[in-house]
Image (cartoon, rainbow, N blue to C red; front, side):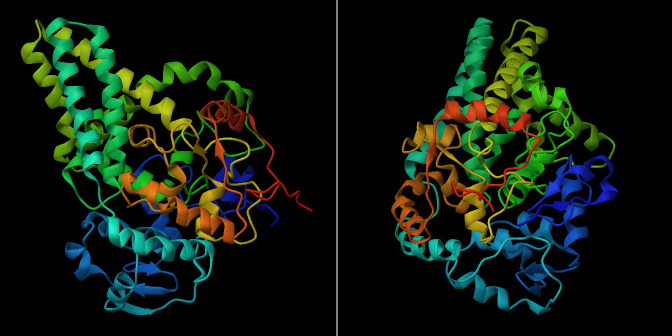
Length: 442
């Protein structure tokens, strides 16, 4: 498949050679979840309905009764939710229920390049795992719950101890446990509404926003121009193979990774609070969770200033650990597909997910490591609403499907991905090899 030019109306970004999408998404590069949603509504053009495959549905009367929570349908009104629907539901029940809200067929081609053919890789895999999940359930196991709550409790106890003892060492440890807590909480905000997903908000990040930027954007359009976790980092971290990257964009992260990492969440949180103050964004109660921790620290500390310094130490540590793990967890290496590289001839969504994800051999199989460092990442991308504790039981079905479709599934070392992140940012040429194979393109 020959690379296609980006849309010239995007100015400097017209040099990107896209292969996944025919044009750069509206509002690219996206910097906020609202901006991404506005662009997607414009590009999908199905307001006031929801699109699934080539049919339109009016889910207005179903929003409040959606088992996963009404937020998912509220924010996606007017968009194509094919990928979200397929990745989140199993069996014939949801499809039958959907027919109650059918409006009409639509002949306009989908903006997304992905397919979900009945006998394709992804649908075949889903059929294989469905009977397994009927037995085990999709939700968290007791081990998953104990790990999540134990990490949160450890963070609170270390925070209390660091404040009482005015210990920056304990504050750093508290920050590390807060990072592990929010990495684990990421497992929960993919699922139906639950109170544990709000652990994520203790960091200053927003679970509400990440349900859009991570679950609806990154997970469904991984490593493409429609992945906000790619575009929001531009121009500081540029992962797509743009031919016009400057030297700083290609090699500067060796220097500025360390000073940038501690401030990412602070900037995002302060921007959100500013938007709340000027009326752009409504105030959500969970936005105040970090301040509740600071308030408690201030009540037991010798001074507010001391509590504030410890609080900042905790969160700077959290940011560093979270960013370091997140950027080396699964997605960035020259051998991994990024928009602009050669795309497979069969754009089955599941296969394209395999092309954009790699698993770390050191993490797989250990639930604590899986929950705290985005492990079992391939299966998580294929089945994002399934609790991490259930993923290991699905490997036999997954590997059987890979064998049937002649997919050479492999693992990478974490060190390889860590180095690969810098190699990917330095890359300005597209990869013309078929993804997932050693076969040379003709």
